[in-house]
Image 1 (cartoon, rainbow, N blue to C red):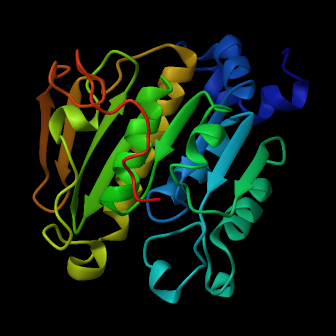
Image 2 (cartoon, rainbow, N blue to C red):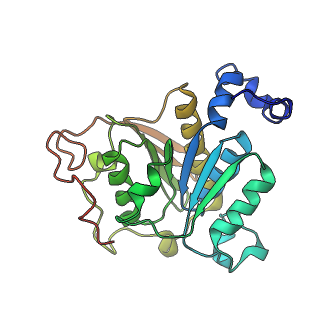
Image 3 (cartoon, helix red, strand yellow):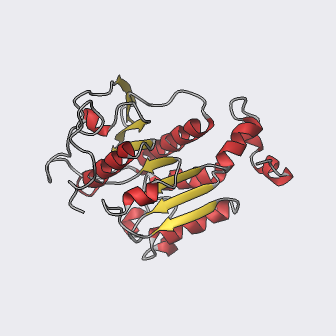
Length: 260
């Protein structure tokens, strides 16, 4: 699709980048990204991906805005408390860029609906806050050969990895979710807003690089960043031949093992 004069102005700072240019911007405008979770990680993803000109942006979230969200979920404002997050997020995204087609899903993603939803998108961004959802998204993406970004943040630190078909997935590192109550959540130990913002923008950057086919992705790499001590570490990974979902003899061949 050829850019209009207005689009050339709007996206001029993207187009000036040698590795994007008009061709890359046209790719973004024809791309479809699904953001699962409109919270601390989802907020910067939705804001920046809308601003940079992703053609279609899906937003999935079934929660409503709570006052305790406002410390980090910057797409939601005080007046949005009590509103569905997808409504609040869509409103801000459209105000940033009316060019972007926003599709919302006010429903919990489950084994019964996730595959139907993700098949419509080129890249999935996982912005959830619980292990059950993270493993469901991982397995659905692996089984359907969908590239996606995984991320988890607590307090001042977090980690992220990008999956593309044939590279290491979440289960290559952790074969199953930890038992309930073993790992703390943000409601137990807290999460600092800028840490979520930092990782959300990393996820958005990974998505853009994948879509334009340029740069190096965090595939087969786990990126860890402790923003409090400024401790940065990247751990090299390899696809695990014993992985239960993407290994040589997978035991997970569908999503029937999930509770819902």
